[in-house]
Image 1 (cartoon, helix red, strand yellow):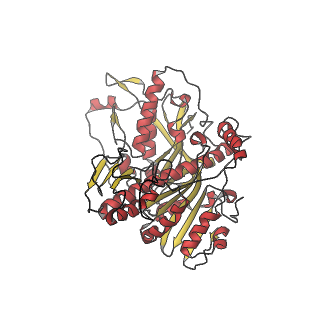
Image 2 (tube, helix red, strand yellow):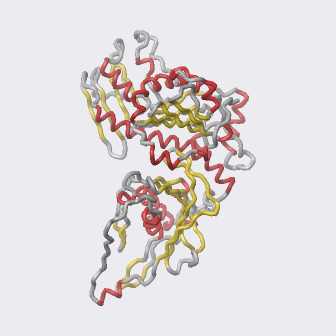
Image 3 (tube, rainbow, N blue to C red):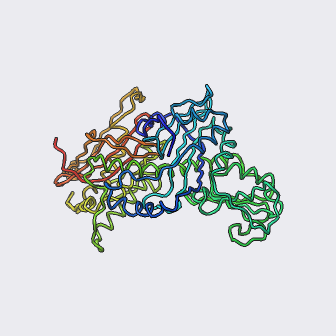
Length: 505
């Protein structure tokens, strides 16, 4: 069905180089409906139901699509040779531009490294609607990340790729001029419904958007949720807005709301902030598309996780498990930069994640947060005596957090700058303090995986090839996690959480 050929596999993409050298400043997302033949609907429903229940029988099941129309739109806009684009080897028909496709078997999902002169873009094409989110009306999803030099090209690319989207026509009773932007209101089910930032405009139904608001719309399109409410309608989005006024609001990580009166455009700095937030949103969409695909490969090939992908049946009431899951959730939030850092827990202090990963917080795989109950049972701190007082030992989940924060020191960059003078420190305490020294030491060990697998980090396939295990003296089992780490850019992805035998030595 797909004439794309001679592509490189997804595993061939130079993810570490992209993470180090590609700095996206804006993310854009486009979604278009796909036609499924009526006779295929029962098969689609069966695939959604049985893909997890019988993974071997449905291993190669996927929705495939012909990407020629999408490539054709790009070729038409940029003056490229369509046949060269479909070769996927980097040629476009223009000497200064390149178009390299990474896709297993030439099928979706695929990643495209696209350069326009010195400008760099990263584009993914996938099918929205898999696993738990499966729908009988799948959508083709195109995600685009662009660096600063690519920004001047984005208006034309945006107008081109928006042609795949569903056009929502206004009511027939509304008299609007031809070409009015109100004819392209993004609505529920289209590409502008799940960004962090929401933009609401209140427009005159007869005149459409003013010149200033049309400019704001073009600057935010496909990078934010855009709702255009016509004056006189009562949908409740615009609230107190007057005609030609606009509001911008964000739901996370920090809530904000800006209001712009008629005639006042969105400042350039605010646009840059929203574009920066759109990069994270688009990467999350790319994560979903590729994690589904790479997860299947991991289940087929196996790894050291010991079957952690299979959730276990757990008791309805289990206070220990409930507390452990809450602690794991908080740790995962801190690790990924979404929670408070360095909370004090008992006698110990978890290292500041932002100090260890100052540029980009780590990402956490779903198998880390949603591990089986058997992994979490027994990870809580034990009571012990210290200095005549009852205190607690290390919490294994906190110990794992501490070990993950030590990764930059364990794997320094090859060209990392070193201090000219080595500084050391010692603690001077009275003799009685000796009884407070930890007599139950902890263990920590980093190793290379003998059977690496692939995960997705910031929208890119990455090779998970290392593992860290932590344990306390007397533990029968250690707590372990597999991870990808790029020392040059300090990019970390933690793939899972599982139990292993306490390492020797």
